[in-house]
Length: 383
Picture 1 (tube, one colour):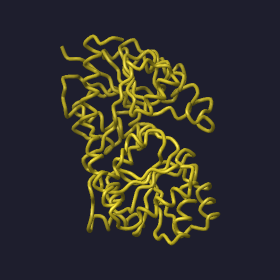
Picture 2 (cartoon, rainbow, N blue to C red):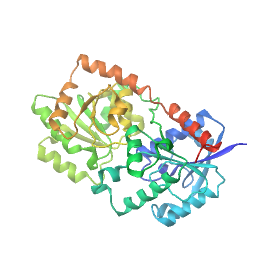
Picture 3 (cartoon, helix red, strand yellow):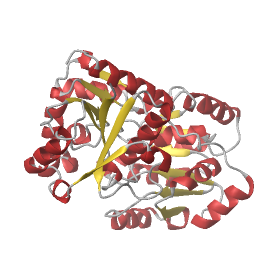
Picture 4 (cartoon, helix red, strand yellow):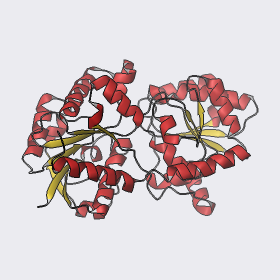
């Protein structure tokens, strides 16, 4: 008998589609389809399917797409939306549902597994814990407490789930994210053309991600100014969707007097990321909190050294293949920039260690682990 497994595809059609959760969803579905482990996969999402290019077309052809109603989307986070979403899943005939988006319903009647990417609102609070986030975190916690298994993307996230949500440790599985095989070093004309398209000149340091407070952009920029004043050269490219933070960024850059040394290329297409990583002196990733931190692995896979924070999940992701610093100490960040700005034995060592480290994290490995969890739960694993 074929076992039907439902997968949460909502992140392929909401604000997360080009962010970490959307990429996690797409790469996991692709890897599960390629492995073909005997499950009939049903992907629940909005509209007639994801936008072209978000997920491999061959994977989409091998899954059953279940269209969620417009109401379920408009009621995102509310009790009626959770009930409507649960009804859609419960009526579909799946024996197991894997929740992937942050906003998970606690009202499923089938067995369930929930991936937890991070608990940012509960760990950082402040601007992250408003009324809406408080409500969907409560639903997410209830769904995790009811679930047969909880998948945490890192040891750090596992510790947060156990500590803040009181989930028994024997029901939490740590399954790391993976790096797609297209993240390899890029050089020559391909590199030059990509950099020219985004207006980036070498030498440059690179940041990829969001601009909310935990990303620590302020301390990063202060550190970069100190690096320049100490004789460092180059620019820093802050890449990502800065929507809502443009005025803050502009004021910060002007106050520091480094307008000519900061580039804001905006959102970067996934196809162009390997080239941008490859040309950079280093990836600068000094967040104060991360659930995982996929850009770290992507950069290392492209042969780019990493300057990163020594907090939350980050040390567990990079191991010894990175320069780790206190994210709240701009002087320490500036010293890290200086250490990676030129050619050195340390830099060469980090390039080799980084590529070896990144090779340990694959979506195929993640999908194999998760398939095993599906099989265990569906075939009678303890609830």
